Image (cartoon, rainbow, N blue to C red; front, side, top):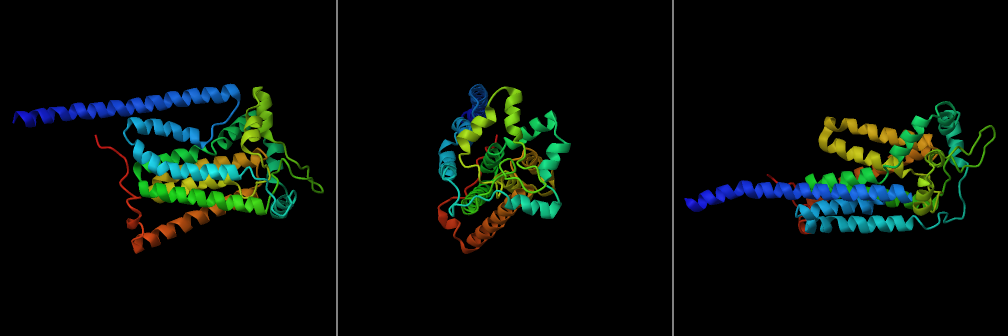
Length: 317
């Protein structure tokens, strides 16, 4: 009886310690992100997804999930870093950059260039910063969403990661085969005042900090990868998985891709046709991965992968 009583009394203490450890992990992750944010602002650089993942690792270490975190995230990080490295390869397998073709398509569809309309009639300081903010979420939102899935739904995490990588590499191959200029780099067409303004550089001037100029110098060595737009593809892919998992409850997440799409066009970084391409690529990746996982599940291949889809890491208190 005494032993049972002591064991029962030890349970609340054990739970309390577990909560304290997880809170410490959150605090340390927050401190790391705050220091990283100061560093980025001070030296005008943008952290890649690997820096965001590092904050998740700090949290996982204190929540005693480190082994599983490394097992699940290292393949994703390696493949994604390989993708980033390949983006540095000059585009243009055939030695031709398409400066006017996408603008011509927009003229035939809309009778004008939406980017030029937005910049001419709706340009404002508020929209400059609004667009810069949402455009800067390019890597952050997909990585944070991956962490949420990894923590609460491991199988959905792997589906999402596979779809993200499939979409990314398909877009990369397309950009290498069909390099295209964004509106701010396009050649002028008869009656059209291209190129458009690259608003992000003007935001730099307003802030008196070469933030985006430094980012593009470090992370976008090849500017001729406008089509398809991964800025359109990533938030749409996040929305597809969020809605598939949470149904109607996830509908508010659609605000995110809409804001990013508007920002990409308004800032002069993408044509509308680039966005359509990015949405198409991510949608196809979503359905291809869903179909493949369904087929593997029916065939028993998933079970033979050695516990790849083990239980999520949510801990009961």
